[in-house]
Picture 1 (cartoon, one colour):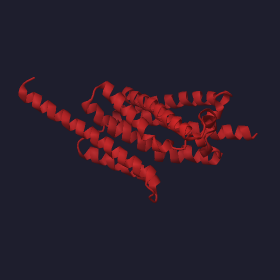
Picture 2: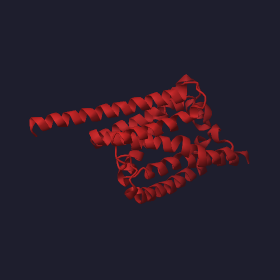
Picture 3: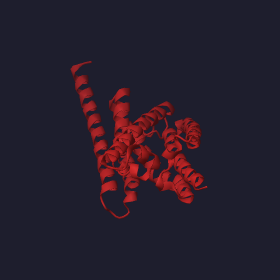
Picture 4: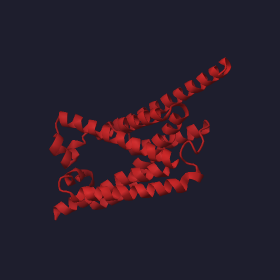
Length: 245
């Protein structure tokens, strides 16, 4: 590589790093604002802010394929997403039927079946799955792929996704019967719950990154992510109903 080419390469890499830092900083700001600021209609902050992120990076030259939105790869992404949904449904169903694991599905948030169905079909897709997938497997992964190798994409992408869930996991053990029994509901239990949530979502993030890369489509991690959250919500409601007799 000539000195001139080296300078161009270094400048390109620097721009890529700055872009990744900008995306990460934006995600931190969105997360803190949505979860900690007492603003009206704050549930709309994440979806609308992520939509603006997509518009900005697209205007700055990121291609549809980099965002996982290439029409050519959508059939493959849909196939992966459907397969992942079926697999998750089987695993979650088994977990509900096993006495040792069924208490971990007892989330008070989904104790009402009608609310669980509404969450699974409306709230979870619109307020959680689509914004997070567009943000992390779309914008962030697109930026990471430009600058970092496979290891960087997985490490940074999955860790960022795990840390994203710190604020939303506050009070996690208090609202889950299984976790409360194992970890307790005191300060130590709360910290352990946050650590568990970050670890679990980091691992899940790595899985979402893998299926996004494998399928080259955002539809695949969207399907897998929805399956984890929505099937889990329905499982929680059905488990509560079964206990109620």
